[in-house]
Image 1 (tube, rainbow, N blue to C red):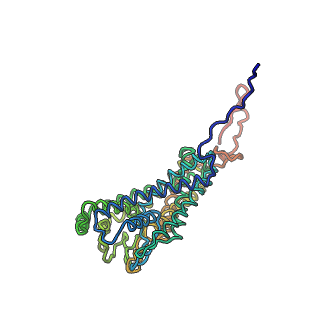
Image 2: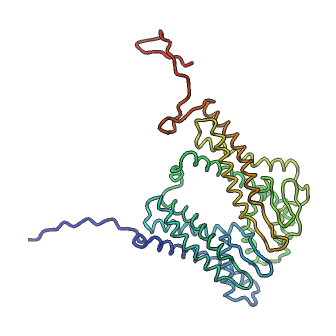
Length: 435
């Protein structure tokens, strides 16, 4: 007689990467992301190598050039033999490793069995640490007599980019953006929303300003393009290079609208009050730079200078719409905080958008990060504070309130206690008069 023994129910199958340590999963993802970016850039460099004369440059030079471009995509500067340090790098090239690291972060979270949002930071660190080491190793391996990338900067920039992009990708793998933003407290979330609105409006305004300026200088743009005689493949590579520098151009236009402007060489200035420029490199996108001391019409200057205040007003409205504050006196303070946050972001981006182009006259190129950040914080912060105060006062009906004792979102109005009329009763119900 046979008896059927009770077998324990098998657990749900785990993900393939859950059996291995998280640091191993992160190292695999870091290697794959780095190799994918290198492969794509090597293909682009190889096309240019085949189409252009390459006497004395072999496949080893192609691989080193691709590695330098990969490092430039991570905003790693390098020293060029006979010219000095090159730090004016295209921000658009950061999108390539950023997108790959975004996907790598999602894969680490899913393959590593990460199920809690608080553990995404460990997954991001597991991806960022080996990725930074790979970047440092590539910086050392790609050194040559012509160019020498900075190894410490490669490690730091590679680590930070992988940490941010991989962390955001990993968090997005667990929950949609709407659910992630709801996890934030009301006040920080409203500040982030207002800051994002201000930055978005300034970005759109800067892009429109740059497009209008380039449209008015199409003749010079065409002349510079023809003077280079790039050919078919060269024209394509030149177009890719100019597209990679478009984020820099937009940030320069934003710095222009804020007032500090930017420089393109020692002793130069491009601002709404006028432009003073020296000889420029033969790069077609530079044709959009305004010329002359008083080249901008007065009415256009007024519109340009009003853009940061419009961005501050939009930030104040979005701030109050996201989370109105019951205490009317605190709304302007949160508006100032929104301006400070926007100024800090703009200052950092402005600093990254410029840099030296050698040790000579072009050692100072781009806007000043601290000037852009300080001016943006003042302009956006003041406009946001005034707008947030007025909008919050109108939204609350001109009355001040305080949160209830439980700290919830419902406002308890500070109204005088209702008084009874005493004799006005009907069917046992007391009729109160609100003064």
